[in-house]
Image (cartoon, rainbow, N blue to C red; front, side):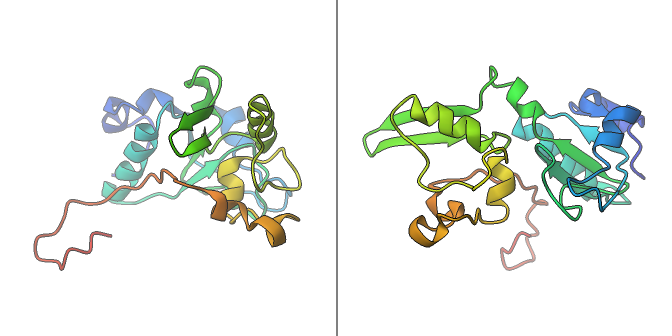
Length: 192
């Protein structure tokens, strides 16, 4: 099945009503920050949870014509990193709407304080939330209006890297959304 957002099988999925083909939404997802690359997706997914993203990946995997998928936060990527020509762009900002307006939590454990942050969050918001608790990230970008997920996808190099390491080296744990095909019993256990 070639990707068609109006196909009955796609509409039957839980993500069917979260896929948008609205021309203004698709148009916004077609441009990168540098306005150098243009790639027009077939649709934009507005997920409310990680399972929506996993369902989209599964849909592409099992499609007779797999389609590209790209995550887009606040759109600061250059050279088309957050674009999917004839595929689906995931609007990561929509995740924030389903977390009571914030994907930033400062938590206390027996090991100390840590911050649980959604990849769609801006570093400026992470800084402001942690400052409420007398804390601050160990390493952050020089420009704070970038998303956590976007900078971590590139290691998070900044002027503080030489002292505290890149942002990714200060991450305790990360959720990665993947889809794996059912385990092939004849394989050696490698399930990629």
